Length: 395
Image 1 (tube, rainbow, N blue to C red):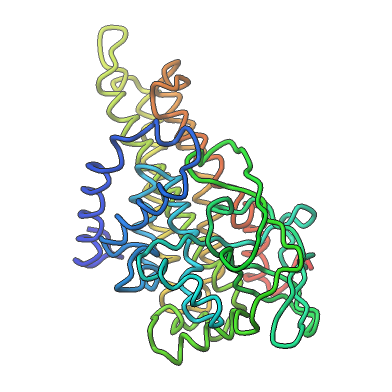
Image 2: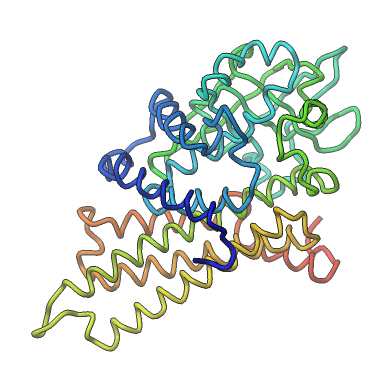
């Protein structure tokens, strides 16, 4: 048992692993060859919601405990990272029930059924890693905001019922968040192809004079959530004292690190089994010194990454002053390490590692994808540098 986990966490891990191996793994790799449809995403979300996991959990708050969030992200990603992306990028649906009345009515039935798909729209074509100065704008008009702009590389964009949109509030001249539903608004999207996470739909979103009630500003929804006392996530100190985007990124980046741990776990298991079964030169390749060195590096990266990720999750859960730094440290280091681990595992497989008949090429593509979303490795290095020195290397 990990020093970071109690009996309840271990129980969650075990039951989830059993479910995933029985219900999800048999569908792979075929399920990962193209983006899942909205109906498929809803079915997966509701199945996991029945286990008390993610936005499909209509009885609880699947994202409230960062360590549970990390464990579930790790386990789902051990089997299928694309599923974890689609599931966890629906987290903005937590706030939809506390938005304006029009949005609540539009999404109410979906939320009650655990069938609401969400997305977080941050990145812009001309902005890239610069999320502090969005080109997307929100202009106050009476009791509404009018949103204009474009977002790209948005997970779930083609199938989402609602988006949490980062935009420049022209009245306050500050970056803010706005809940936009696609039921009452005509939102145009375009699907994007990508290297990894093949099973998770990704796309661009275009906002052309999209109107939302003023209660759809995120902080208004969060205050309604706190007043209702319905969600533990709003009680986390980071949401009370930090920039909302930084608080959410701390959750998300910890989850991304956990995803990479899951990929490393899968690569490790595959490489170890292959090393013991594959025989050349009169014996298993696992008996060769250079292969054992690869296995050493793989296991060391896995265990180190897991411990760093769990520590980041603990600090986020406690609202620790170092939580932002640790989440970026984990996201940057662990995601990069997962690429090295997947690469070493491919090398253990030799030529078979390049074959689509084996899972290693998928592990590698998914691991390589981990280093960019939710802030590239380079951005994580700058965040950590700022937290350590108090001096920002970027504006």
